[in-house]
Image 1 (cartoon, rainbow, N blue to C red):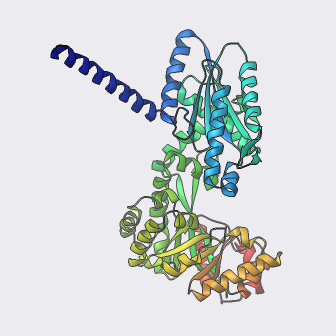
Image 2 (image 1 turned 45 degrees about the vertical axis):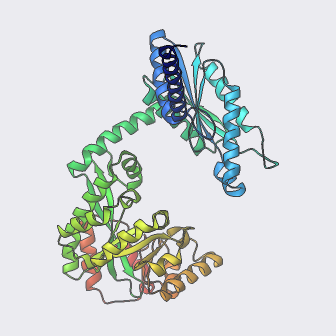
Image 3 (image 1 turned 30 degrees about the horizontal axis):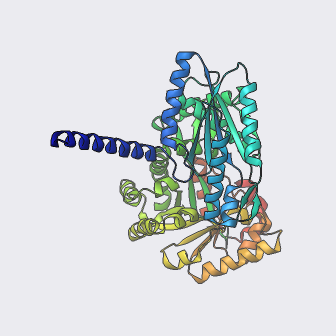
Length: 473
């Protein structure tokens, strides 16, 4: 065979080999390694392509988003390897059950999706498919010789009936799924008029929230922290409130989750911090309070530059660093201990105090108190509500107070709403308290008036006249 023919054949073989390698690389990049299903990235592209084709053909497409119920429990009890085997089995069942023209994907974790063409008019076909998915995934699975059946929840949205594009279709299916999960799972739900109204409300709230921050509608409110010995106000916690032009005053629960979802929580924290420092600095200078506490979003804490940015913002205010307390949650502390340590050490080096919030909610880590410069722990309100009624809770709280005192850490109990709770906490050695028994959060003018009254009073044990103090709050 001539050399030129041999060379040409070799080149063709090499080209074919490279094409095969490229196809394999592309396939691997689009495939979930555990289940062999299409992965999230390829699913998103495929959904867009299928909706374009449906638009041209004036056809309908249903999207089913599937989330396994109690999968975490299975993972925790049988182990991660068993969890992986279970996910692989779920993927195989979905693949085997797929009808012609359907695409099955694993979106991540225990969430799957099915894109299905809808051949007939009306809601009947998507409803039948959703129920079939539910029946398929509630059948028992054999894992390590054990029969397990965590069950599943399914959310459904249909193009173009519910949504005009891929982004909205997926979001609406997720909304339907979320409704099922909040109702206990093990059923399916379609996107409907009720969810459409909720989506409209959320879209409106999102636009209003983006406008509210630069408009100065997010403002600081203040809740007193009292000395357990005499009930005198010694500090305040600064909390965010939204003075909505139409809905009135909104508590954090009405807008903070959305702000976190939209990535706006940092801007809200910054606005509340600056305004809160401006209002409290004169109170500190006048000796009306000792400490000013701010909650910090876990998302902000995960920013490696958070502590430096906070120190920079503090430097632009008149509030002394020694009066500032930054409250962080235990969940964040344990999520990234190394980053937590860097933030805490930078802040405490400048004189800022650190408080460990939600202490006692199941993540309590006394080791962190021993090895990190944390000055304060805040006992979670879930413990305080039963401390005067349940002897076991009382013993638990007393032991936590004893451990914290042994480490030289100040203890603040939050959520104190009854006289009996306050009396128990004081007798058990709690240092400071806050809650509705003393005062609800209030605007700056009311807080300043209450501070001056508290500062002018003759110190007294708070439980000597709780009714009068409560009425004044």
